Picture 1 (spheres, rainbow, N blue to C red):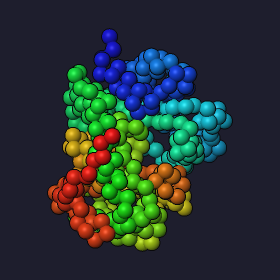
Picture 2 (tube, rainbow, N blue to C red):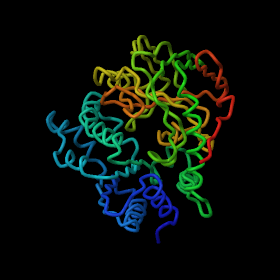
Picture 3 (cartoon, rainbow, N blue to C red):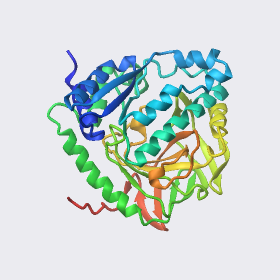
Length: 375
């Protein structure tokens, strides 16, 4: 019998996040280990009269390609995939792994070329999203591997995931995320007039130019769970230094204690206590990978622990994160790098953020509540 929490999460994604409609085409990208949530999504799509199909990922194939594929095979993009991106109305991505460390031993240079080759598909789909032609939502189906990374049992991790998504028995998931949308929307509107942000913390003093960029409320439409406000900063406007207290995780690789220095928007110095080779490979992925594509405030205070999974960790209440590489066109971002790598700065103890010189955030939170406009 299917755990009803998978059923409720699947229904939340298709009904609220994707607003799937009769006759539309939904693609579900998922590994085999995510089968329970795939079934929940598929059933929800059928109930709404949509057409759905599953693009399933077999464990170990990417590892095999990185190890044994030729250069041509490594960067090959199927024309079938390219055509699908133009045809689907909605995409649900389930980020779940049976082994989150499967690519740890992969050659960093080959891995970054593999990632870069596939970014064109992602960028094109974001263009369609920005034009209102398509929707997307990413979520997670609990597995033993993710539970181990979070240092929980599987049962504890399931409670954590489904609780964060608000699909436990008796919870009004849609009502919760609509309320979140109101609050975060108000915060985004307040940030719209800000010209410059200054982030201050341990070994951190970073200025970001955000003038003219749009702040977006992450309210469960693109991710579940969600809970942040983000924008794409002006690409040449980052100045200063920042240190990331949490390990920076990317495709299973962990880079510890990352420190970056920016001049003219570009990373000019980078170091890490572990994973430096991988850090440098990502920074050198292309001509725009050393520039920023995102800055964001994590505002989901129900997520209060580091789990080694960016879906949750970037939303930790009281944190700020920036992303190297690709920006968001709908936020005004112009960075089209093949990279998009989120790195989290924990500001919960002694961090401060200034907006145009005024202190607006201290020790993990904004000093004033936003003015919510109830509709």
